[in-house]
Image 1: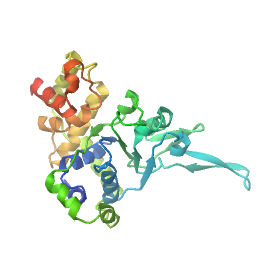
Image 2: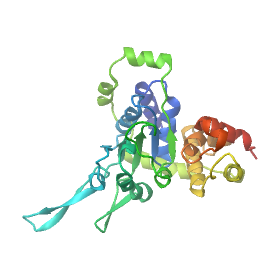
Image 3: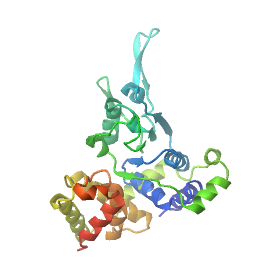
Image 4: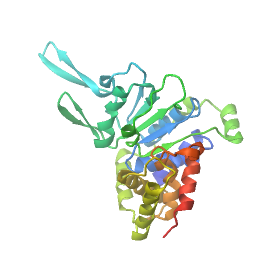
Amino acid sequence: MSQSLNNVIRQAEQIILGKPQQIRLALACLLARGHLLIEDLPGVGKTTLAHVLARTLGLQFQRIQFTSDLLPADILGVSVYQRDSGKFEFHPGPIFAQMVLADEINRATPKAQSALLEAMEEQQVTIEGTTRPLPAPFFVIATQNPAHQVGTFLLPESQLDRFLMRIQMGYPDAQAERGLLSGVDRRSIIAGLDPQMESAELLALQQRVKEVFVSPALLDYIQAILRHTRESARYTHGLSPRAGLALLSAARAWALLDERDAVLPEDVQAVLPGVTSHRLQAVGEYQKHNSDTLARELVEAVAIP
């Protein structure tokens, strides 16, 4: 792992106290060229994590507050008629940034949510018949409140599938919470953070992820996981081929974070909860199990070749 990436992790852990696993998962998601969904209660650090990563990685950052009256044009941009030139001039929206925070994404209507679909899948947007590329790297972090809260809309499956991972922050442990209570306000610390990496180096690391070696036996293991979810009666439906690709990419990124040039089964198991939590829906008595429990049961059910 590069020294810059070590510095990114160390600096992020100084702000996001007691959450090393979530920080590494977020970085693995970024290195794998995916997008991240963070679902949890308000006030547990979802937005703070996005701000810290953007600042530490030195990425151009835009925040979009999703509300019930948000329109697709508020995200993508709009063409405005210029009287002097007699032409329409395009004014890009906040989607044209290297890192976009879609804050409380499930408070917007499905029409507004759909504005992100092409951007997240193709790294481009089509507006008024013109296709416009988005900057590289391009990373969307979306936060959402639990679906039972007032004023939320369920994300459709097509939107959820665009996210490589979904993670939860959770409450801090006692020591981390004491540090938050007795320390300096985190927002003032974030404002003073120095970038630890340049965009070119991040793009190079994303390329290195693709080069991490995957053995045939490891592919057998991933296929066995996919097959088990499709044949098991615990789930409404099994994992798709896209989910398998997401699992493979995330495992490669996790191996790179561990300074290895080959993927191990432990890498797959480390990222499995994040990759499957929003893709697998349990049925019957298994609905009471949380995503971590379902992932642990899946790991126990599938033998390593």
